[in-house]
Image 1 (cartoon, rainbow, N blue to C red):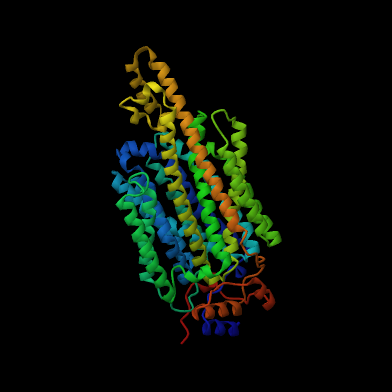
Image 2: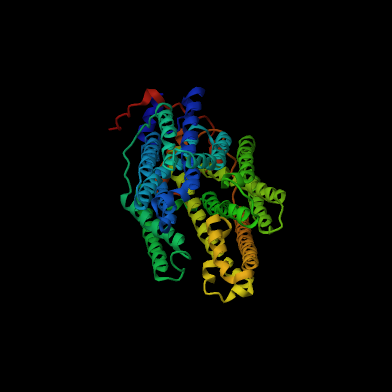
Length: 584
């Protein structure tokens, strides 16, 4: 043991600690991670249900989009920074800090008395959320080698599916009860306290064997590159046109900052996102494929409720009920794919099948129309969900299989970062397509008597299908047409349904094309069998030395198998609460 310890100090590489924990301790660690993920997932779905009531209370309809945008900006931009910090200074402290920020942000959101306050506090919450997802998956990587990790990653990712179903139910109940909308934020407090308590007692302390240098300049450049990119994607086609000076300026500035960030990271001692990660085929393919799949997935998640309620006229208390078939499919394959990966150690076929199902599901959704039956809608959602479940869990394990434990935070956060960018780009593009196609369709579908009506622009809004108040307002407008008013109103509502159906069908068809592109990318994925053990100390030391010398930092499982052997015992956990002194 002394020999191993001296080796570690000579070549200071932190080691995974899963093999030193008891089964009971590991169970508590998994519970802490699941609670942290549930905290973040529930918040998004619960708050989403309450937003109309919140907007009405704070009188801030014009700032509606910023509540989500602020959260997204903060979480996405901070993900890689949190991941790198957890590699350097330990998962435990930053996982707890992230949850604490999230809970404090929840309380502040509940105390908001203006939309400005709510937006700022949601952004603060987003900073905490940026730590919780990548670090939780890195913690699982610390406990289990990749083959066993796949099983648990699938189970953990299914938490998101469950939260999507139950979150809107909880949000709707809280909003409609005497508690009021503020409790949609306060409900995070007890869950957060339990999660922080579990993490504080269950997660081992970090053993720091060397000093780290934080790349402050790289972190600032990353934020400067990400924020205008996401703002441009969120505002483009909505607040400003895509060709406006504001949007073009944001994209140009973002591009310049990305170049500066790349140049900085190539020289940094400990980069936030190492550009050399992309020299590894598996990381590059996984990042691109997961970004494309996320774009297709979030298009379905966001616009399916609009189709079901607006086009088919199905009433539902919340979007969670509507999306239940899709999420149930995702839960099944998220867990099932993890089990198969754990048993076989091979992933390429699973990922290809999952991508095919995602593209096929989107195509089936694009074939729906006004006369589509609910059974067909459910079938199409299940197919899409089965594909989504694989994408939600597999890529994280595939990428983590390539790197030693001391880099899991960096690579996991990097993958999550590109996944978040992909979903943002997808939502921005799909939203623009929906608006443009709906407006174009309405011009041809609107009754002739209304074509030249001065207030026709007021009719160019699919919200009339979802909001009884909007529908009644439009209905009242038709009274000026006299006896034909009721007939024109019915013709108008039919035109809205037809136009919305065609627009959403186009959107799903493009999502299917994106899925096909993702499939082509996945075909280039190299398959390295999942390791059944953690890397040995010698292997991590070798990779660490290569990374410092400018090598790729990737990992070949075949090489690890050739080296053989189990990981040496490294003391950690309760007996290592105090960090040792650095070597002289």
